[in-house]
Image 1 (cartoon, rainbow, N blue to C red):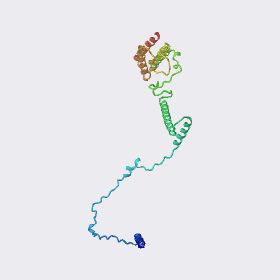
Image 2: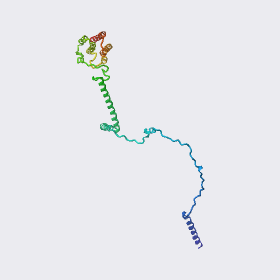
Image 3: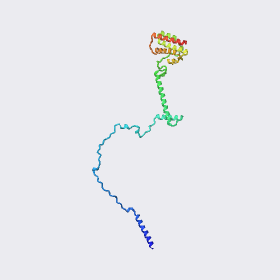
Image 4: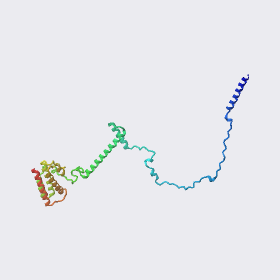
Length: 261
């Protein structure tokens, strides 16, 4: 019986201890720690007494920030009529040829238009030079570019039909020595062409005929006669009798040389 009361007492004490441990913490009051006051004086305030220098912007400071590095918003430029035209032409070419990308076709169109522009400029320059030189249509480096325009008569266009001996006699009788020298020159070309030294063409120059001659002696003689002819005919001044006789003898000698060989 005593053992039973002892066990019952032990269980009752254990229940009381467990109830005390589970009491709520809300009923427990904890006081905050006390902090002692810190004394503070006006002398403890630090005052910045250093001089303050004002800064000013330069007048044109905005120009320093106008480069591409300072552009943060880019606007897509509006397409012009020229841009639409190139795109239209590129689309037509894409239907004809094969391009990797549309940009490739646009690059091709841009290059093509540049080439066309250059060709147009060259043609315009040619027409301007053609008008300045004369109505014969000679290019600036053409055969007669360094000569004055000579209007040929119908007879002179075919030297093989002319009787130069008669024409020279008539010119000398009229006192037209310059024209007589011109007839000597054409007579020489006629003889050279008949004997197959050259091929006659009214548009050819002295240099053209000189390149056709094969023998050095013929080239030397023709070079000197061409110099006399150009000096007298294109010089547009009258020659004296002595100069005419000397020139006439040289032409007669060359005409005889090319006739006999």
